[in-house]
Amino acid sequence: MTLPQAPARDEPHGAAPDAAPARDAAPAPPPPRGPLSRAVTAALNGGPPPADPARLPDPAAAAAADPYGDDLQLALHTCYELHYRGFAGVDPDWEWDPALLRLRGALETAFLTALRRDAPGGADVDAALQDLLVEPVDAHGVSHHLRDHAEPWQLREHAALRSVYHLKEADPHAWVIPRLHGRAKTALAAVENDEFGGGRPDMIHQGLYAGLLDDLGLDSSYGAHVDAAPAQMLATVNMMSLFGLRRSLRGALVGHFAAAEITTAPSAGRMAGALRRLGAGPRALLFYTEHIEADAVHEQVLRHDVIGALLAAEPELAADVALGVRATGLLEDRLGGLLLDRWHAGRSALRRPLPDAPPVPPPGGGREGGR
Image 1 (cartoon, rainbow, N blue to C red):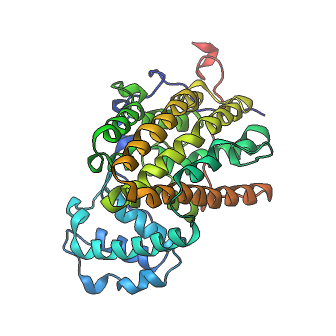
Image 2 (image 1 turned 60 degrees about the vertical axis):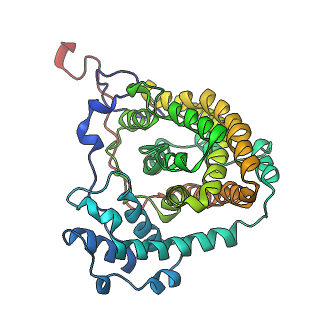
Image 3 (image 1 turned 90 degrees about the vertical axis):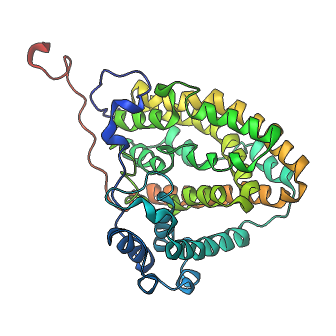
């Protein structure tokens, strides 16, 4: 069974950011999922700051909420997006509104407390990384399922979910660059340069992922699939912003980045296999084939040059680096468990269905007689 693809367009193999300005526009705020996210959205939609502190939840409400639940994770995601593209129709000065920042701080504290509780393990960075360097022979995660068994609708769901991060790939990690020094800064900036296309706008990884979405007949505009994403997906991205935006958690961000790069190359190989099996087009394949070799190099740089140099200068950050590694595994396992449980039961993992993929166009682009 082959995967229907969107009609081909006359673009470079990696879609240049200038090719689709509407795709890169700021999204609308996502619909709320509970009292915390409703209050945040109402504040943003209510005109320019300052916020009325009486209309925002008491910080104690964040402490009482499920730290991994839809409401808290969406509220946090909405607050964080003010530091990225922002939202259409929302005053950009909300980014630094003191009352909203106080609420965000309470949301972060609840989330970080849960991560520290659920991803314990001390300060042994080598031990934390070692668990990722050798994959068990009987491993069977999401990428294994997609490569070997998935139906086209499951591949499209996965692509839509991962767009919550990949359409801003590497942006959360850029926050840590000013917090590093010397060899660690230089090495991490070199990895980021690759992620941003190495000077080639057509090869920026965010744009490559937009091309993948286009090839699968999915909306490739920024933030298009946030409303469909369950809390487990939002949490993986919120973790990056939490670690990146707090200087005190710079070690955790570096640990997360290393963990992500170690696991990406083998996973990308399996994802390329899934796309080939289901008949995806070359733009979809390019995103993953580009990562197979690049991230194998990146993980070496991050382990030896970034983590090594950081801990040589600031050995007291070892526990945070290890936390970043373990928290990444924790949240990815939670997301993977949800996907596999739902898919094995024949159910969608999304909060709302995706539109059907467009049919494969006939020869000649659908024009009668091929002319």
